[in-house]
Image: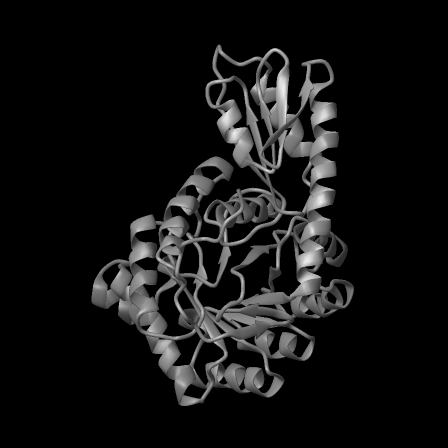
Length: 369
């Protein structure tokens, strides 16, 4: 059931974060951020690798001090994923990590200091060919903008962003992306929609401080889903008070649901009811854990009864329709029957076989193109 997304994406100028293209016709990249102490190099490297294994394209690391900057240099040597340094208050930190191999500088211009300090960072980034993310946040707007609007608003976020875009324009620096984040969904969506009409650079999407795993996922899906449906967004981070690996998983699920990226299994599963012929929820929980390692795009249907089961199973790459016995469809055709005994074990084997066959098909298509 794989098909192209009907979404027409906003055309943006492409920048490079390390070897990852952001903007233009590049896939929407997924980011997360470490929450270890950056000065604990071993712990931070370990977390970065787990985030990378989960499917992140880019990882952001907070660098709050010059000691952390030196640690960042050691971290950079031990990982091969593009790293963004998150800088606040002290412009000297940005200058140092630029010399230590950072792939992108994230600065909040509202708290980086006087213009000369921002200028020094821009000139260093230009010299080193390092892109910048202008990170505007509803919680840290400049004092004069706060006074003008009285409280954070979409217009306030965009005015702050454009002030710093114009500053970069003065120094002929165009390799940047912009975020205008708020924890309020309506504010963030309105700000991004307005900003999208005013600049050509890529937009980094996020609902900041979205909340815990469940609430933050819902809030992010609502806000970022609305923007992505509009074609707005070139890279994103799901901001959760949870393990950063979960941010990556949610990001992938969001993009897969909109057919904007494909990686791994897209499950179609019923919520189950008394008609089910096997334990759907238990089966799904086990399959999701067991099959996390599969990266081949694959639609898998797990439906508990004969009402919707055959129809959904026929549309999937591989589908299970509950019955007596249960019926397996492969590529739209009935293939075999499975009893409830060892159901998950047998289904896992069939899914892995189908994934392997499909990867061969995809590789052959790529070789011909």
